[in-house]
Length: 251
Image 1 (cartoon, rainbow, N blue to C red):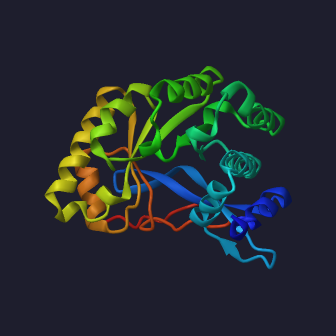
Image 2 (image 1 turned 90 degrees about the vertical axis):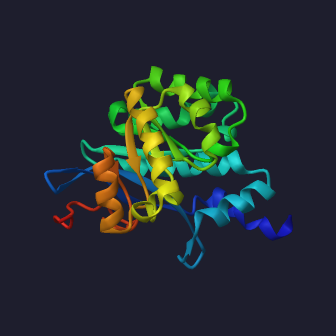
């Protein structure tokens, strides 16, 4: 418990920064940036980076998951104001939100203060595998949508049996997990999951996003399947400032 005390100070001092990773579409072999996922990183007192998994592990030990999730969300919104007209993907942990009207009030107030258009924001459900109460998740997401925001499901495909249950929440975007994207061009089991997820996603009118794209072979495979959006090191790693342009690297 004492070993994780540092997370209390990090949250109190707001030592959190944002990195940006582009989300792209591909049209006639041209890469178009349609949005950015804003990823949170912790900062040591000397300015060195603390990875998110380490922050949230410590927060869980200290029972500070809600406080850290809120701090990361607010920092992401603050740093989203430099993104003009494109989509802004912001993560949140549904189990950290016990009452959306209360817990999200500060988030919505900051979005209004910064004059960010609600339709630009895509709130991204992380840790989908830990979502036990589907009604609680629906309640949060309905609250988001009633205020004009979009939402996405992250890491879908991991624990594939839960996919159809999670899709009851009717997301705007569904993200195929890295485990199924990376190497999909050479693995029939991954390809099957990717195809099934794509079919369900399109059937309900949502966009299918493949994250973790790292090779041209996998990208071509996912394009041929019919995926709408892409994200991964093949295009750009997370960066302290948003990438403005990606030259045509797809052949």
